[in-house]
Amino acid sequence: MKKAFAALVCASMITLTGCYGSYACFHKLHKWNGTLGNKWLNSIVHFVMNVIPVYGICYGLVDMLVLNTVEFWTGSNPLAADDSYYEQDKDGNSIAAVKNADGSMSVELTTAAGETAKMTLQRDENVVRALDEQGNLVAQYEIAK
Image 1 (cartoon, rainbow, N blue to C red):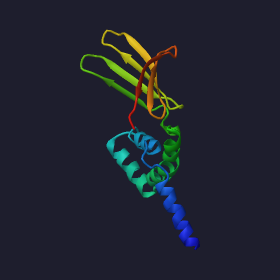
Image 2 (cartoon, rainbow, N blue to C red):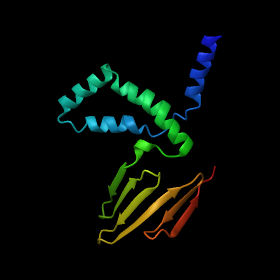
Image 3 (cartoon, rainbow, N blue to C red):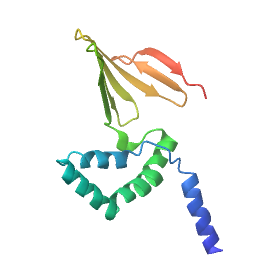
Image 4 (tube, one colour):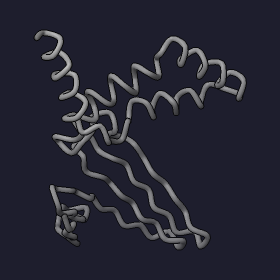
């Protein structure tokens, strides 16, 4: 009976965790490994972290069972804060975005002429809102479920 209950608890943990998420801990660790130096050092550290199972613990235990569960139920992964995105097109226009700890995203658009616009994107269950620097609603988009 105890084994059946333990198996049921384990199966419930796996199926109720909302495992599909950003895997922020694993990606931060992998990104850090890429900053250590040349390809040889990166490969050696990567191999060691697979043998020790740092990557496995980070991916399977920390991300899948803890952080992605938090992300599934709250909509925000605590470790994904400060993740950033930057892109510039061929004309010189750029966009920079940083994910905030509260789950919102700060965005700065810059034209090739140097004009900038800053906004904050907030997402509720099925609505995305764009707010200007003063917090006024600029746009709203409803996501179909």
